[in-house]
Image (cartoon, rainbow, N blue to C red; front, side, top):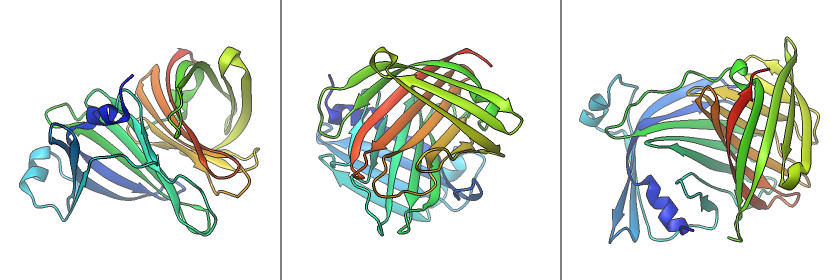
Length: 288
């Protein structure tokens, strides 16, 4: 098994993309072109990370490279913080270790597919309300910049068979298991979802959602959960607000092909403590 640092090194390179800010209801607020570079120093024992933000969207990378960034941040580090975990393909999540009322809270979840990355940052305000989401779409220098179309509900309908890997903040051995997700439309503006997962298919979760444009609203549980359908085949799942004494999760999804999807889930327990990180790779078996 690779070390966490070795998994981080899968992200080395220069990544061109944009930081796209959305409000909780899915309204786009701004789209900022970016170049993020991760450079290995001292035989890759140290990482120098540079984040450059540019003034306005441009049609070609060359135009970004020839202009001056409006903002630049440089980070240099030789160790990883407690709030971050990596999978062996370089996918990762970093963020708050603990939810607490009256404090800001949030996390970043990042997926990788070859020379492309998709990252999502979900932030909650001091009132524990979902405040904003930032979708980050990137490709390595020299690789195609092609993106998937915006995700639609029809893309999700069907039966999905997956394999999940769960890793833990205390670095105990990972857990692997199969998943089965079925999403079907029951009415014009309503869907039903059934998720089966765990060893021997031991856990079954059923829920329904109201379809409201690009939002799927699940209101049956102890915390209302919404799924936003986003550009580049992405989706963002989270509670609308967080309350103490309730477990919850943050999730990003990425439709890589019509029948192939990745999901990452960052889970918190009833005490508000970060408990696990799960990466699901799934394929569509049939459309319903």
